[in-house]
Image (cartoon, rainbow, N blue to C red):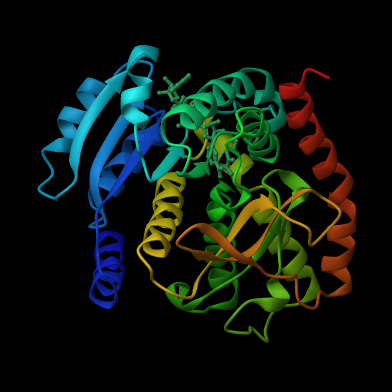
Length: 335
Ligand SMILES: NC(=O)C1=CN([C@@H]2O[C@H](COP(=O)(O)OP(=O)(O)OC[C@H]3O[C@@H](n4cnc5c(N)ncnc54)[C@H](O)[C@@H]3O)[C@@H](O)[C@H]2O)C=CC1
Ligand SMILES: O=C([O-])CC(=O)C(=O)O
């Protein structure tokens, strides 16, 4: 179903604009997210070259995915020595490299190991595909995106329009939970989710959800908000030590990468919630609705009118978000 929708959306884009093919690189391509995400990108008609990179295991993954009868030429790259070739002139780089949570951990507990992994990968992006749109999935996203920004700045290659924290899974979850609770058709539901990607920094704006549900109480909205904020933890607990969300994340990652590709290809009016450098709050990076264009961020939209409940949640998250952003910046600057 998704593949058909993805193909239809991209085919529409192709019909409306002069299509060209794009190179997509997936870093961490042998992992739980990387494998299905690589498959979904192989099915995207806007992709003509697919580079699957990991520290190991990618020859097998690439051989497997390459047999899918779609256009993207697929190649595996393994180990540091092949990272440059994997990234060379990529248009979009998707980064799900790093360790996932185990029960009892916060995303921030992944900082020490994933911070170093992301830093090294983004240095290679700066050297090999400085114009690529970067889709950061590796956690803690609230800090890995500022890490990437500082690395790119240090290399003189930072373009804030092209660096995205992928928060699409929060939107996917909010839509699913809201549709279920309100008895609405899931595919027709939209819910903006703003802030960041960890605990209370995830803020679904159910007051702006469409279609409007008239049957939800304040207690329902509070429960839906908390379930969205804890969606990742719900999966971590259910997997009981075997990692975190992979399949729903691969789906969400492929949706966001497809939006980037369609925007690159000239399709208009592409709006996604994503975590970017932003001035709409006191946090230097913030997820909100963003219109994407050929060069990445085109317009960062404001938050619209919030309920008192949403405003209180927004006020409460800012200090945590600011702290996690500072941690990422300090990590690169050595403070
Ligand atoms: N943004 C979001 O909404 C979400 C983010 N995540 C995050 O995505 C990350 C990956 O999760 P999974 O795929 O489940 O983990 P995984 O452990 O299954 O896969 C990670 C892959 O990264 C690879 N890797 C490690 N160091 C690398 C390096 N230097 N270069 C390239 N690849 C490297 C590993 O070899 C492994 O194949 C985690 O940090 C997780 O927390 C997970 C779900 C949702
Ligand atoms: O919860 C985790 O650790 C993985 C993640 O970011 C998510 O599923 O939203």
